[in-house]
Amino acid sequence: MNSKNFFGMIESRFPETTPRLTVFPSGAFMIDLTIRGNSYCVEYLPSGNLLGLSKSEQISPFFEGVDESFKTVEQLEAKITEIMKQKE
Image 1: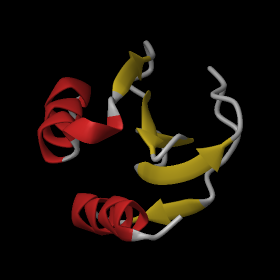
Image 2: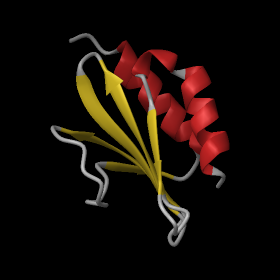
Image 3: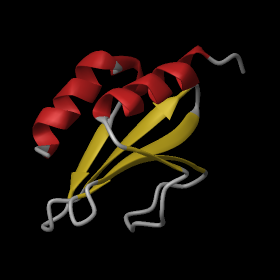
């Protein structure tokens, strides 16, 4: 998965989340999102083709596992949309 293309999709689809991209030499990447003041992290690990989303109190530069994993980008997009629609 190309990190810059994926980031561009997230940035254009969810600009209000102020996404921030971190890319690692392995091809893994993290995209930090802020949704209604809460921090979330989209993570991709190429070794297992793992795409996940976690809510976190503090963004970490290390992989700590994910709260929920997804098989497709569309499933991840649906989850972010769901979170954004939730009432506080």
